[in-house]
Image (cartoon, rainbow, N blue to C red; front, side, top):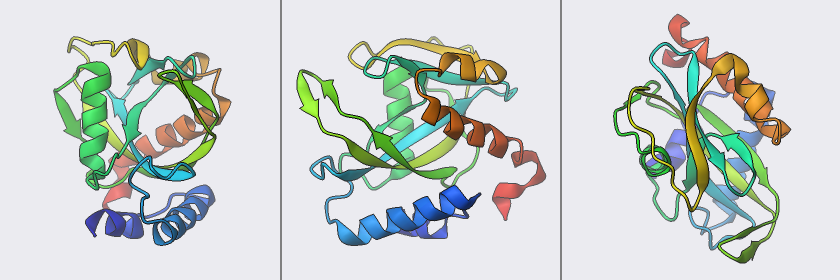
Length: 193
């Protein structure tokens, strides 16, 4: 399956990604329903870290459940085309459609902890997201649209101010810092190796 091969081929960036990649591949071998939320322990998600053309801003949504500014993304819900899922979630959550894929392959692999919460009136137990992330570019002149059942705001945030907006999720700040570090390697051809 191509989606599994894309994870196998993924070139890890650091020790965290190396360990997370091993865990993701182990989960894929262990569970049959990894692409769906039927697996309440662990499942695949796909997200987009969306920057502007100047690469100095990121498009974020204010997530209703976590009361924090966050990247776009969501559950695969059975779809094995991880890039397509990331783009679909981006379009649904922000309204943007003028999108360019900067790195055609997975940009980051991460195992993310999800705390228990209430969604649509139902309790969701703690679980893990096996996150595939893609680096996309969007036109910052596009009209932004709030998806009220999931977020209460959509806006471009300067990369150097991202930490101020994500203070409610310090674990995600580490992830975003890694993304910014990796963005700085694009021009030297890091992702072409």
